[in-house]
Length: 149
Length: 149
DNA sequence: CCTCATGTAATATTTAAATTTACAGCAATT
DNA sequence: AATTGCTGTAAATTTAAATATTACATGAGG
Image (cartoon, rainbow over all chains, first blue to last red):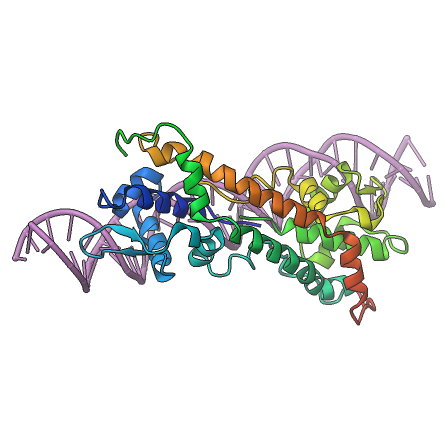
């Protein structure tokens, strides 16, 4: 299974934009420094979130703003926006079982039956958590003065 | 997120051993052909399952046998045996957020709060499915005559 | 029209996963 | 006790995926 770090980076960006997006012009360069992730990767990421309607980006001049109330932005939605088929990639399947063997012929189908249940459960789990929850956790922590980025 | 294909291969092996382990001497070489996965990888995999008490391997002479009733072998147990900290590796986190930025300083903690819930949910989900369920699905399928492997 | 951003393609680098090679150790068979 | 076929495991190589880099066209405000 595998959900990439992109999800974590996206959340980082969304929290940042929510907290500082009004006062500050949040550019990919700024987010790159805050996250420690390459600016091009940030742009691709924000671009995906934008396509899903989660945020808007002022192209040319720079800056990003949330378009949805944080309670409507679930982890599922974020993951889906970044990587549309992340759920099917969640659990890897060996690609070349032998077609001559009865187990080999049928294993993919057998695995899929159960894996589908796991995917559905994970899906529900990810839909239960929203950006709002994460912001609440964030606000509960001390030391949020910004020395720099 | 990421659960490796090893889990699928392990299940393939367990089904095979359950179905043919009595009649046939199931060697790593045989499982390698059936799965399409390298024999050394198979041995490492079976070795991990053995350490967890799921099966026994007749070293020297070859052959493997299940030690547990299939109903007690959950997907969780298999994943855990293969990769003990697969749950914490499930969702990747960007390794170098800026310590100068308030979001950067706190993001790991904030992510962990929510990710822990997701991990727990996935854990329950994986515990709900056993090898017995998979065997039932397998037996429901046609064409289980073994031409070869 | 100059400056600073975004959007995006192409290439290169890094990292992780799986395979290959190699060989020591074990157990049954002769 | 020597041979055979298999396991156990380490080390090196290969492959594949994720991420970063470079480069440049395009957009919008000063």
